[in-house]
Amino acid sequence: MAKNNKTVLALTLLVIAGLFSIAAGLVWLGFQLSKSNSGTTTPPPVNPVNTPTNFTSIDRVPLNSTRNVDYSKLRDYLKQKDWRQADRETYERMLDAAGPKSQAKGFTPLDEMENLSCTDLKTIDNLWSTASKGQQGFTTQQDILRALGDYRKMYAQVGWEDEKGQKLMDWNYNAQIKRMEYKVGKEPNFKNPPPGHLPTAEREYNFDVSLNAALKRCSF
View 1 (tube, rainbow, N blue to C red):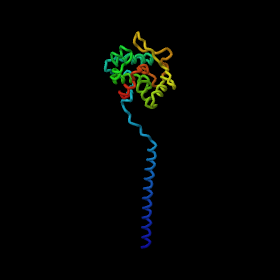
View 2 (view 1 turned 90 degrees about the vertical axis):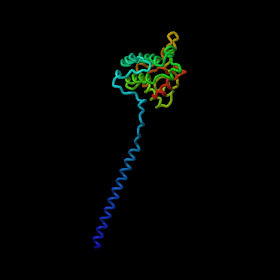
View 3 (view 1 turned 60 degrees about the vertical axis):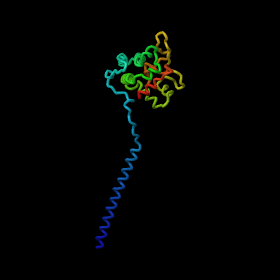
């Protein structure tokens, strides 16, 4: 009888030890999973407005406009990778999109900038982004600004100014034709533009009104 009791006791102890081993194993596994997950940063949710539509071809980009602006010529220049003509065409078509005062002046006054169509800005951005595979356009410029958190650093990064704030691009206002023109030797880098370099429309020459406010309003 005593022998049987010893046998039962031994078996009971073995079962208890086994249960403890299983529990310890589960605790260790949970710890390892927790440790592994703690080293992984969950990416923030993507705001669809901030991400240009990934069109497979620039011909598929819809040329939407609230003022019936014709963006077909801009699309053609971008398709040809003619960055110089595309930059100029962007400037002209943005004046059309802004309104009659902008068309007459050659730059956008405050009231028209505040009402500049987000639809038109998105069309221009989608064309540039698609043609450059995401290297150019308003979205890219704003992404760089957010990453650096400072306009001066952003302007240096995209090649509009040097690190000391000296302009690498600059404009003159041609009063005869009422249009902005690049100063000789201060043109953008059209041959090998760094990311975010283009387009330059309404950047730095329209001192009283900032395109940045319109881009922010349109959630770029």
